Each structure stands twice: as structure tokens, then as C-alpha cells.
Length: 315
Image 1 (cartoon, rainbow, N blue to C red):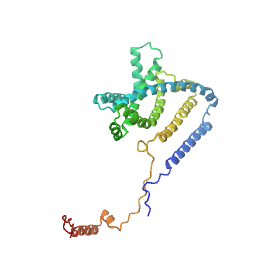
Image 2 (cartoon, rainbow, N blue to C red):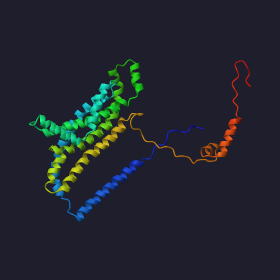
Image 3 (cartoon, helix red, strand yellow):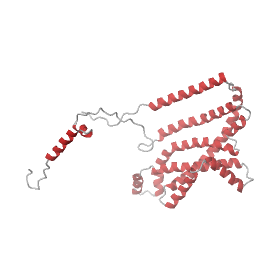
Image 4 (cartoon, rainbow, N blue to C red):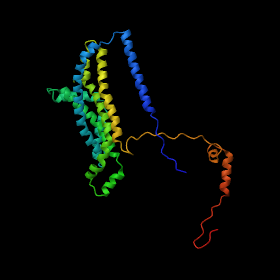
């Protein structure tokens, strides 16, 4: 008989169906809410939204500028600190650990105001202090999280591969270049993209210190009284940016997934077969006293015949 394939069958895409149902439910709910507002309350001023929408789009440039600069600078710091976190020297690991704990252990909101007043204390006449403070705060904040991303990527490479690289004569830096980095960088691409999305959303906190990004511009426009229209546009613009980026993350996960490392394809466990309570093993497991007595009697009657010494016939 041909051997059965032991690989469990793939799981039906129930999650995708659930996501589609959830998306449809959200759209229906939003449409219902808009319909209710149009019929029972003041209708949305679509003419006002059309006039003010370009103003908010201009503010998106500031949000993206701040996010990109802070993200790239934070990536450089995060990579260096992540490499220190994997060092064999305790002092270097300690420095990186203190950095990560200080950044991840305090809220971004507090970090923004702390840096704002520190810079104001030492450089009160600094031009564009709010913008520079915002970039610096986001840079330091994302560096703490990217440190852990790079640390996880570097440590995900199997130790056997590192030892094999040393065994064939590769130096430490050659091993990092040809063995560790190529695999680690493929694993960290999806979480780094997620970190960029989170950093973009966190940039909305900079309006508290006067950075004229998207949320700040929406706040100014809302003083005219059209609160619902303004924040509906702000809400929609953030979705227009983050939803496509989320799809990019999914594509990158599938594109750069390494078999045996990182996220794997989900599989379904084979369904359990009905329990046959008539078998001896099953009765033993389910507490059949008679079966256990017969098993003990069989063991007592069993005799183990030792192997015959060399040169003598066996019994």
C-alpha cells in the first residue's frame, strides 16, 4: 500500500472570509451612520469638505516628512543598538538594554514634552524648535522599538549556521555579511514596515507642541465649527495612507518569508478519529479495572530469556 502523506491539509481560508465579512459589516455600519446623520441631523457639508480637503493634503506632506526622517535616523540607531544587544560583552549589552528600557518604558507623549522643554532650556532661541523636537522625539522613540526588531532578526539565525561559517574559515564580519545579515534583514522587513505605520500615526501627537502636521491643521480648521466634516477628512486621510501600507506588509511577509524561520503557513490539525473503547489500550486509558488486571497477569507470566554466550546454542 502507498504510504499516506503525513502533511496536514491546508486550513481553509476562514480568516479571509471573516475579514471580508467584517469589512462589509463596517462599511454597512458607516453607511447607516451617514444615512442617519443626513436624515435626522444636520447633513454633512460636502462642499466645505471639498474646499478644505486640499489644505489637509498639504499637511500630509509635513506628517510624512517628519515620519520618514525620524524613521530613517531611528533605524540607524536601532540597528546599532540591536547589534549591541547580541554582543557577548555584558557591558555592551547593558548599555543597549538601558537604552531600550528608557525608551519603551516611557510614553511618547511624555518624551515629546520632555525634549521640548529640555531643548527650550538650553537653546531658547532655536529656530523651528517644535519641528526639530518632534523629529528628535519620534527618532528616539522608534529607535527603541527597532532595536528589539533587529535584535530578534539577528538572533533568529540558527547558531549552527554561525558555527559552520566559522568552521570554514570565515571571520566574524564575513559571517555577518554572508550568513547572518542576509537572513536577518529578510525577517525584519515586515515588522519594520509595521513600525513605520505606527510611527506615522504617532506623529499626530506633535500637534501639542505646534508642529503643523495633519492633526494640527485639522484642529485649526475645526475652530470654524465644522468638527464632523474636518475629522471625517482627517480620519479618511490616515486610512488612505495606512491601509495600503498594511497590504504592503502582508506582501512583504509572503515575499521574504524564509522556510523554517519567522511566520509559517498555517496548517490544520487532522480531525480526531472516534475513540474505539473496545480495544485493550483504550480500556486501560479509560480505567477498565479488568483490563489492567489481565495486563498485570500477562506481565507476571512473561519471562525474558537471556542471550546465549558466544559458542553455545541458544535455548
